[in-house]
Image (cartoon, rainbow, N blue to C red; front, side, top):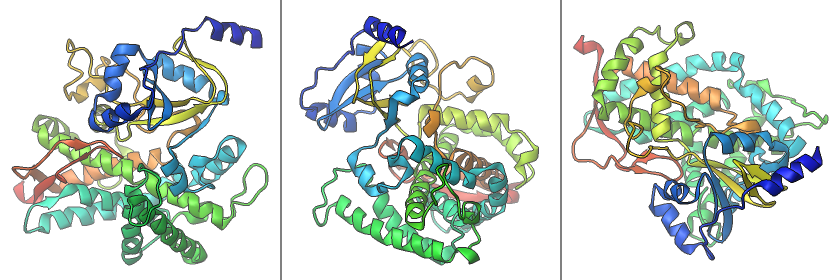
Amino acid sequence: MESLVLLSVMAAKPLPSTGAVTGLKETLDFFRDPQFAQKRFIAHGDVFETRLLNQRLVFIRGKQAIADLFAQGDALEGWWPESVRQLLGSRSLANRSGDGHKARRRVVGQLFSAAALSRYTPSIATLVEELAENLIQAKAPIQLVPCMRRFAFSVIATTVLGLDASDRQALFADFEIWTRALFSIPLAIPGTPFAKALEAKKRLLLRLQHVLEQRPLNRGGLDLISGGLDEAGIPLTDDDLVEQLLLLLFAGYETTASSLSCLMRALMLNPEIELWLLPELLDQPWPNLESRRCPRLDATVLEVMRLTPPVGGFFRRTKETIQLAGVAVPPDRVIQVALAPDLGDGKSDLADIRPQRHLDGSFMQTLLPFGGGERVCLGKALAELEIRLMAVGLLQHVRLELAPDQDLTLQQIPSPLPRGGLLVTASSRHEQR
């Protein structure tokens, strides 16, 4: 068997390269050009190597390359940029590999079981109703992006940690400081975003430790993993658990806030889609959505995630030579699975927003908005529940309109968000009936 694998690798094509030496220009282009990866895929194929900040990176896309990657999971390990590794912590699931990762993931995953999500639904519905009321009562246009960010944070802080409003507020301020520096230059010089984030992390871990000490009175889901043991029989200690909770706060926050903001932006920019979607949403029994399917909503969310993926990609590092779509990738290479949208060659409608493509069988691309393989996002099911509850609950109660003269273009890092904050006016939908 090993000889067959060796022959296969020997027959593979060499890894195409952009030829970057220092990676300085490539790094500048990466941050400036949303089509950075797309242009290089056109020039070099679905697997190519370049340098960013002197780090060799292999970008991949396409059904075959991604399937090959997932099929060779034993030859890979997780990887994050240095800033992320330091700010998440050495115990974090994101920085673990092998049995230690799998065991702790199994324990923490209990927070997102079907039974847990059913328990969380009433609290999430209440947060949606509070947001709807605040929007309706606003006397002036209000930025929707900060509202969605606070909502996404409040969901996981409430459902998992069981925090009340005042405790959530104290945690949120430091969390925003910490989040903004996750993908930054990891220089801890006083006054830099990274240095501020390290200090914020210390305060966050202390607050999370306090939450664990109050566990017997907790109203959240922490009891689901209380006393959890990994497969080796090692207790999930509180020091270990607080770093997992910090990761969960981030994973359940940034991408969900991005998805919700981009969904609302898309609906307001394309009122014909909202008109197509509304009859289905208005027919849903709030908040008990489990009894009804929402095919139009599901298709709309998929289409928005296709055009504006909540993350630009995810990373793996090779432990040995592997073959991706017929290309040999050597050991110790960082692979980024690029999730930028494939808009076609101009001969199709892939550059247009059309949710119906996900219902009529015409869409054949691979979508991985939550990553894939054994490291697929733990909070995927919670994020999907939040998005569905927000879309149904908010649009059943509120009619949103874009305020004029604002910047609706998207920043891309760390996740797509309207640069102008998505300024909206809101009115009660019930009063209009």
